[in-house]
Image (cartoon, rainbow, N blue to C red):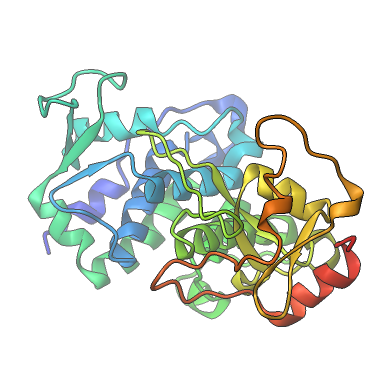
Length: 302
């Protein structure tokens, strides 16, 4: 494992804005977040070789981690810029759709990994060290703790790596758990709505499916993946409004008396009454019975 790749992670040359704060708060988080996402994909066995596009798996991670830094940096998640510009530091070569070298973020559709860097990403020891270097170097303390939580790194491991575990960081701990919840639920359901079986994503990795809490987070403070369902945005809204739920046999319940449908899809929800929840073959994550029971008894209006 060439040692210079670890040192490269500490020399990302990010945009610096002193108006964002002192210390690590000055640094734009985009490049470091994208590299953390690459490490995540490798850890999950979802890193294609030798090229990678803007996949839903990548975009979900980047957008979820962006929620941790958004209060500091502002704006919307900006995946396109680091996806292109890290090519200038030899992590990869940015490519156009027709496999030519790209010279602009606007034309960069894919990347081709540097073979040495790709070998590092596939090395478990490198991934562990790289995560700690990226988090420690480019993020302020409160975001460090949120990212450690999002990555599933225990407080004991964090302390062994000499991270300062502040007692007043509950807000950022929550942001970290939320990011982990979103990533696990949506990826485990393979970006497919549990109500309809529908999935859709763009060529930039945006997806219609999102992670929904069953026992509402505001009441339960529970970000365990078994308290989640992957749902399209309309199905999520209907679930939170109590229009539908799931029975003990994992079949759809519909509260037909409290809503009205109209238009070409006028029976969109009512037609799903009694149908099984969609779990694709190989999907092992299931909602916990106690959370579904809470939803039926507290939210569902049947």
